[in-house]
Image (tube, rainbow, N blue to C red; front, side, top):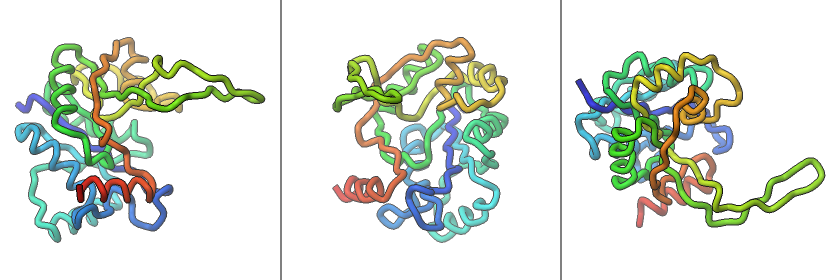
Length: 221
């Protein structure tokens, strides 16, 4: 049995990117973004089970892309749901590993050090997420005012968020609600502590045309 299962979520429709093609299929260096993401995890841990969540209406298109680019890296495609929560809940039915990493398909620049931090951390603590310190000042906005806050008390959250599978199975028994912002918030709501590990600055989530241009720069450099 695989020790790790990796769920790559790719259910977005790319409203902020513009155009008709969902952002996860946009090309970086002549290869769809999702393929870069999948390859990173396979290169890091070839034994990991890779599961890709896609809306049913885009699965045939993905198969066409895989044939076009001769992308034969082993992975399993499962149906995405209405919300990210539902996609993960469905993908968990297929996970064979003792540990599950959940990663945004549009984060193709997570590095090997971050993955190592996550893999080691989840085996020790059971629930870990990669984070970064804030560099810019923050203000909390109210109805008629704003106030500065201490940025040292906050972190930027990235993926992959990694958990012992048993913990995730318990967490995903809870019903969906709008307060679930990520897997860590759901796991925390279920009563488990979240351990923080160091992420990497290049691990951006590509959601806008500016992000895409920066991603192209990262690949070229």
